Image (cartoon, rainbow, N blue to C red; front, side, top):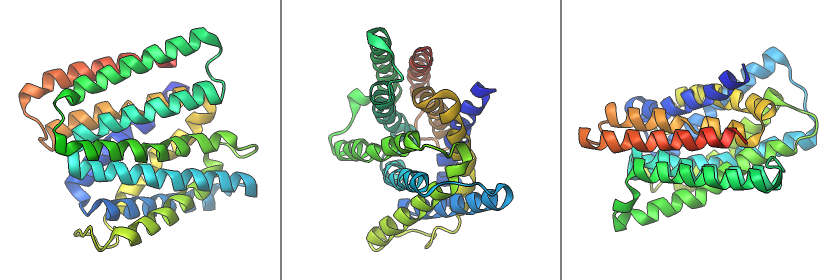
Length: 282
């Protein structure tokens, strides 16, 4: 059951970028604002049903987690439009895995001793090789370097998104979903206000992307549960298998690559999955 719960975020996060690019549209700012609005709606509904209780210190930690998410997600949404889903997702995944694995393994003590650390670093190297094969990073155009750098910088937001819930003392799982969603919405709103004049789109306030938030909510809610059941490293690594879903669907549905690229992409994803399997064995 723990494994099933940990795989649900990968499925829904994998489908999300395809849904947004194919159905909802809008600029990355409108996608970010709409997604966070949908998440808040879902969180309010869950709060009214289950009436979760949470202390103010834990509320703040979850709120900061959500605020960090807006930075990471905004960077990734921008990457979809600049690089394409099948290119942006594997690279963003690599940056997230590196940061969260090292934070969880070393800062939170989830890797015990030199053996776990050595195995963890080996798994990270395998994952990076998989991403490079999947993405064809050796062939990156010079004018794309800035886009990949932005993915790296904003990935720090994802690290905070995963790390802050680890510090809570009382609230677990879905108890923190509402404050986390409020952090997402407020930060997304300020990011939107800062860039709306420069990045126009066909979904002025992200209304259509509220559906994206509903999809995201399933992934985010089950991820919060998985963090407690499986630990930061295992929970996060398994969710990052969404790269398989996103990349394949990006090629097949969005037609971001031709048939010749499908073979190396599949091989790279297989390597990435193997690295993730090695990681969760620690």
